[in-house]
Amino acid sequence: MTTAQALPSALSLGWRRTRIEVKQLFRDKESAVFTFALPMLLLVVFGSVFNTDIAPGVTFSQYFAAGMIASGIVYTSFQNLAITIPQERDDGTLKRLQGSPMPKVSYFIGKIGMIFIVYVIQVTLLMAIGIAFFGLSLPESAFKWFTFAWISVLGLICCTLLGIAYSSIPKTGRGAPALVTPVVLVLQFTSGVFFVFSQLPHWMQVGSSFFPLKWLAQGIRSVFLPEDFASQEVAGSWQLPAVAGMLLIWTAIGALLAIKTFRWQART
Image (tube, rainbow, N blue to C red; front, top):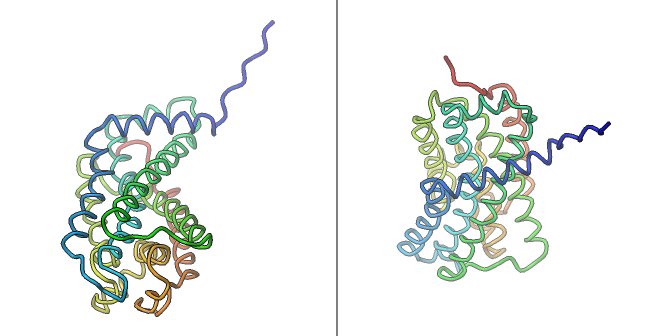
């Protein structure tokens, strides 16, 4: 009489799912190029064209590089999931996974694992370009590295949950990019990524302050720009407690919306 073999845990299956998600991303050349090449291309183009001083010892290229690292969080989590999940819903992937013995949580663990791996690669590439060509400096203290770590992790969790929630809005996978990409672009233009935030119209500053990217960009600037640049921010400081608070609020909102709205099958 043989002993029944124990079934893999949800975490173990989630890790296996992570490897599948990463392989699928790199096999899809269009997705891989969009995920990795677009941020680097934007950094090179904008960093080269607008390489003027915006404060003593700080160029727009350095400012923009910090903003693109913050945008990388949104690209790899929110934008990625809000586009790919509707596509998987359309092609029947989610329906098949729903009917399989795999715990549903393993699917989300796989997505989260893929996002963290992709972000590490992406941010490494962006930092390398910023350091090599635009005078970006690595954090010089343990406190700044810690700040970078918690902003990145909290930002990824926040934007991942929002991406899962937003994935229920597109009716079809084909229409998802048209409903997702403009949202990300508008937030970049109004959140201090493509333009210096303090130079934007007041109404735009107020409006973007309700969304996570403004706070992500400000937090990342606190890591990569000189400490005295904080005086150039609208509030005259980095406002790191406010950064954490806004990201936590949006994390809670994203979790609630994701639980309430996520669908495994397309609307009929």
